[in-house]
Image 1: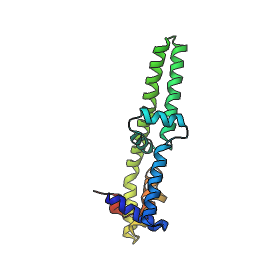
Image 2 (image 1 turned 30 degrees about the vertical axis):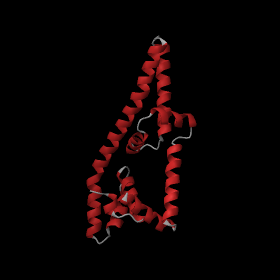
Image 3 (image 1 turned 90 degrees about the vertical axis):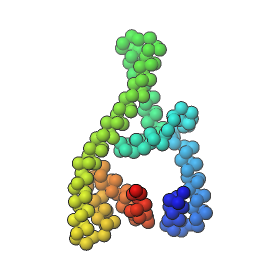
Image 4 (image 1 turned 60 degrees about the horizontal axis):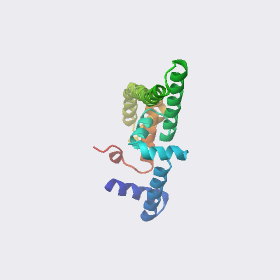
Length: 185
């Protein structure tokens, strides 16, 4: 709750609004975001009824470096399920219930496995570039650059995914968050 108040005060200073107006705007944004996760109303309804933790799925998609919404991911999963169901039914001559079951299992497993693979690949690339980023920050600090400028240099010099993560850190520092707030213990 304290972090939320600090965030709201900083955002109100940046936007030039009073704290109460900023709080109301933040609440409206949360409501809008929760109501319209995808652009397709049917997918929104399905997610509200059957998806247990859409925030966790969104976090996994972000970790994989994908710019999909949860609704787009579910739509892709449904397409994969339909494709494999039809393939099972027409090419392997299975009955409709068996085809539906195999399509459903493929529609759930294949996108999930693909996201797992992309997360692992991104994490591997991140850890491979991390020593170079730390070295770049240390060299910047030794040359007299402040910490935010050194972090900005890393975001410009290192390629994604590490550079893009440092760019997010740099942007948050630029709008007023301190490093302590970015990396709580």
